[in-house]
Amino acid sequence: MKHVSTMIGTAIAGMFVMSVWGAFVEQGGIIGGWFAGLIIIGTMWLMNHYLGLINNDGAFVDMACGIGMAGFMRGVFENGIQVGIDSLPTLGLVILGGALGGFAAFKVEKYWAERDKEVAKEAA
Image (cartoon, rainbow, N blue to C red; front, side, top):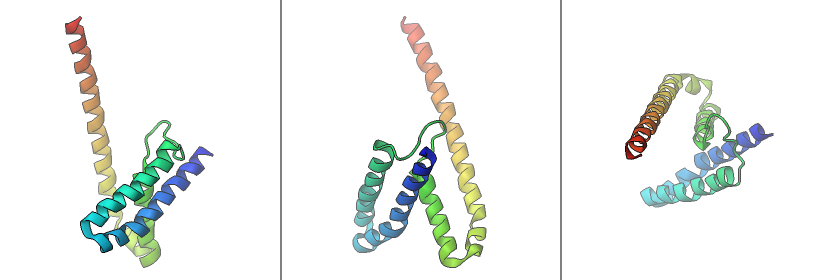
């Protein structure tokens, strides 16, 4: 059931971002975009993370995955399958960038842990 609630929570976040954010930006420019980020992402974060709709056990998958999938599929539904096919190279590079960023974050965290361990040893 947790997987279903995760899909529902990320889908709701994706639908709100893809349908409402642009209207805020059109009305208020950059301030509207900031306001949309605060209202939409803040509310969705509260629902998904604080109230526990998204399952974050094991590998961390955040709302961004659902928002990205909603944006990808919105383009496919509005403009046809060819739009999705044409965007696959970009999607592949985004996935590669995310993997490299995750690997870099892992290495930095590991370095910090080792550094903190050595500092604690020297202080003792």
